Length: 573
Ligand code: C2E
Ligand code: CA
Ligand code: CA
Image 1 (cartoon, rainbow, N blue to C red):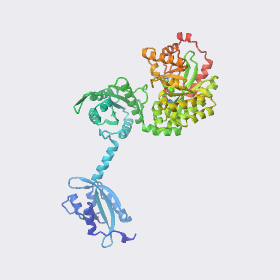
Image 2: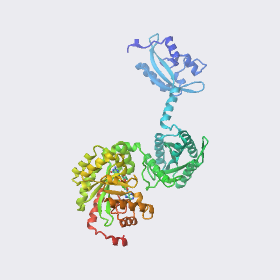
Image 3: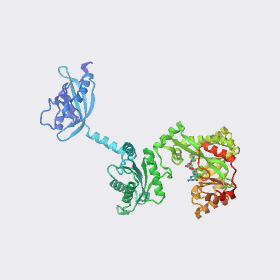
Image 4: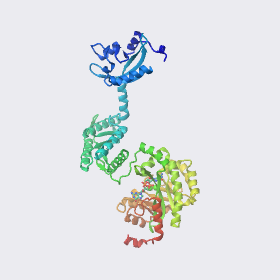
């Protein structure tokens, strides 16, 4: 090691350091002070002379034993080292970054130079940044990121202790009205007050996070029984029902709460949140200002979920997507005429993820083109096998999302599926929604005519929920209307829904369209529809969506079974 390059300490150097606002020490090889700059003395505030003191004695975090190897390394390698430690001063301990380097004294012996920089401001900035990354700026509550961390901790504790806990999603009812009607400043003030009120009703050990515009999540360790949940959610709702006085306005709000419980409903944080969210949606749908505990009947949440999105790309690679088939039957004979293909995602830990959760995400990130193309081809191939077993012609109905329909490659995908499977075009029904047609009617017209060239038929899915104008039914080459299940659900009791179904059936008759009634769950519904001329039925009554092998078994059975005449069926259902 050429010693000549090492800096020689001079008073000038000490002075320079003083000017720069740093504190400076020089140490002997044992770590005792040979010199302390004025600034160092002032900061430490010691009346006794510092020279001769071990540096370690001035530090809160390092003792002599811990410091010795650092000094030895600097002396040996002659390369500088950085350490962070708190410097003890008269009334507090201040974080410093200490830079240790080696120099040769006038006798040519190595000694140590220590330059210390006050890190208080930097630490505060780092702390602030950490806080910003993990907290919501408006309410100062933990954000989604910190919520995830906390939940994982709570889950780990619960697993150890065997004690369950609840997660509650709290949505403020009608917040949008306040924001739109009274302006954002009032909306913001309301959210801040709401956050404070919610926080006050909870215990210190509970976590309250803000996860969306008007959505909060409370994690409640130790709250797991029905009575405990009722008590806490009741308080949460009540505190938001008290009037808010903001800038001269008196605002009355409410809250809907959804609850999921560990471990009964789910054991991981993503799913717990999703289920609590689904329960909250049901609370909102069923009258608001109430708490609903998750039950398996709740649909999955429509919320865009980043972790789910990441998992989806993985799932495509791993082949976790599969197709289920739901029979579409003749309303009169109940013979299976075809199947609707419904996509499923079999996630290794979340279980079956329903399409309502992942299709909207796939639609946003474009993955739907890939998934949709696969589904179309796989469904066509599957139909061939169904036909072989059933020994007759069947048809397959495939959902086409708006983005797929608009994709330039869609016709190629269609041609490929038909050619590969060897199906006749007319055995294929493509289900699209009214919205898909209306986004760009001119483009739609051209695509539909090309589909018609291939003899594929077009069905309007969820008919009745989209556009009120029916003119498009004449304009486009449409073959099938699928009545949305919301119009079927309350049949035969609901007069209004009955009127809608009758109107659709009439319309279809005049335009020479087939009708499929979706979501038929009861015998009464089926009879009501059949009597009014509805040809086809799809619903849990005549077959739930099922895996391909189950569908095959159903087809096999149906060849052997005698089809029961409708007259007898009414007596012996
Ligand atoms: P959809 O096209 O309206 O499909 C019918 C939905 O109703 C299915 O839900 C089905 O399981 C459900 N269903 C059928 N019968 C009954 C019944 O009797 N009662 C009740 N309550 N529900 C019934 P699923 O499988 O969860 O699919 C939801 C939606 O996801 C579908 O609605 C469709 O829009 C979309 N989807 C499913 N598979 C695909 C796909 O391969 N591609 C595209 N683009 N969308 C798909
Ligand atoms: Ca459909
Ligand atoms: Ca539908």
